[in-house]
Length: 245
Image 1 (cartoon, rainbow, N blue to C red):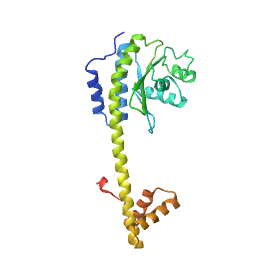
Image 2 (tube, rainbow, N blue to C red; image 1 turned 30 degrees about the horizontal axis):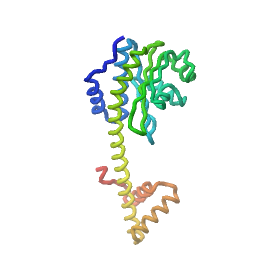
Image 3 (cartoon, one colour; image 1 turned 135 degrees about the vertical axis):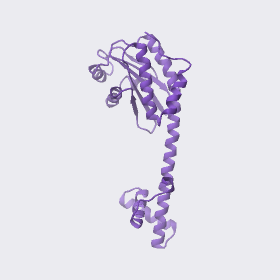
Image 4 (tube, one colour; image 1 turned 90 degrees about the horizontal axis):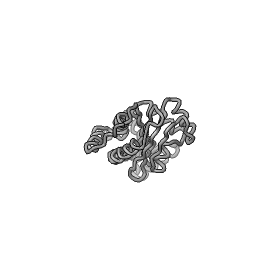
């Protein structure tokens, strides 16, 4: 078996994946394809790669080198446990030599064995606090991952996790910017609605805000939703803020 291609150019290749991806999800998909190709060449089999990323306060993101690879990881999420989730929880590599005879995670292993995935190797990725991930490799042959392949996959993962850490940080900053923009947009819409109420009722801004809040509570709707409805009622158009121009 060949060694997994891990040389001085690998970090640059992985960084290029980060640069060329639009978001974290896109990077994970590209990384899964890249990883599957690298391990397939080393093992001499068509190895699939799934990646599971769990960020604090964010939903679990599942990516894969193919639709089947994503499905395998999604099935594990449905079962609520399995080699991937165990690797993420324990921060240790988990190997399943033969899914057809594996006694751990029996239900999950039975399902993927029936789908032709007879070996599994799950390598955790060490990320920033609050985020966990794992590279999950599946092969169509039992005992496909020997000790040398496992070591090389762990070495490869140590390189991949740096790029994933960078992608997650960039994604978090993008999300923060989007959240801030949405908050500013909502604030602008609310201020516009308060202005309308002030004009209609000849009241102060504080009194207008209280009227808007009372309507929000009475209808059990967000303040911004009530504000947008009020603006539409007097302008017959959707409210537009400078963030959308």
